[in-house]
Image (cartoon, rainbow, N blue to C red; front, top):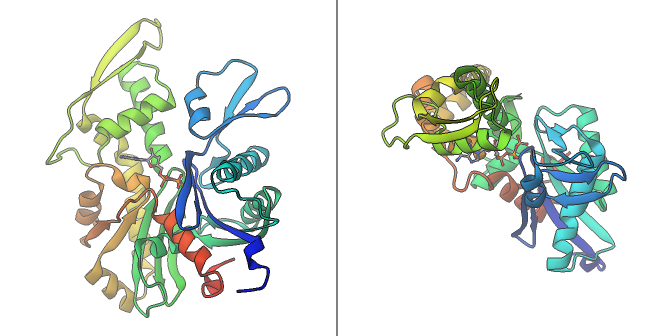
Length: 340
Ligand SMILES: Nc1ncnc2c1ncn2[C@@H]1O[C@H](COP(=O)(O)OP(=O)(O)OP(=O)(O)O)[C@@H](O)[C@H]1O
């Protein structure tokens, strides 16, 4: 530990399309939706995280709510910077983070381009990071699940987030084969919104579509423990008269089928490119499933039936990547080879 290391404050950030999590001193100190509300005229920040989410879809012309990330990468640089800065400030009040030197470990999708990585680095530096390290999400997920990433054996993770599904096989501290597809939880939500419009002529917003997903979302049409139908309320898209539609999980399983098939295809393609020795390890140990999307009812069983390999949902799947990023932060020197 260096003489002035007490001047360095350290944080780990899981900058997600749907949620951003910050870990400081081994604790989750920020866990907020990745959304900001800005004044359209001045560009000033009005709200951040959950407060901004409450405003989403309910704003007037002077306020815009923005989700700075799309498909796992920064889509709006200005909004992303404001969001990271604002969320770091949230810790300030809680943990007196007043350091002149902020060390940040932040995770990025494994399919990020150089330009996308630069955007994350620049945003983190503009938000106060003096030293910024980046780690690939599947590697962080493995660390968070508690897997020895340096072991000479194959481990496979499927991380279904909001914007991306990250699939990777890891052995000896490196990614052996991987696939990052831009189909994940947000696409499931968009499928539901479109289905309701098409099938039931009812207009619903993103928040209602996500509610439907949480209440009756399913990857299979024959669940062992089925949820009751969910009543959706909204205007008829032609007449604007109020409608009430009961939605069943079978309907939603049917509507999500196409997107889930794409996730299955990506998993099979990754397995196809996995060397046989590592494949044998994975077949024996199973595949880890994490990220918020892994909580979709029946998904684990559907993937098991498709691949004939067991799947295990990680503990607390919404926080596995953040926890792993926190572990990387605590061991920056040891895990240098995992960082970018
Ligand atoms: N119980 C649930 N059932 C189905 N989906 C869920 C459930 N809980 C959360 N989700 C979905 O999980 C997604 C968010 O997951 P997560 O926080 O892991 O993503 P993220 O890290 O923000 O995204 P990304 O890694 O793609 O940038 C959202 O689409 C959310 O709707």
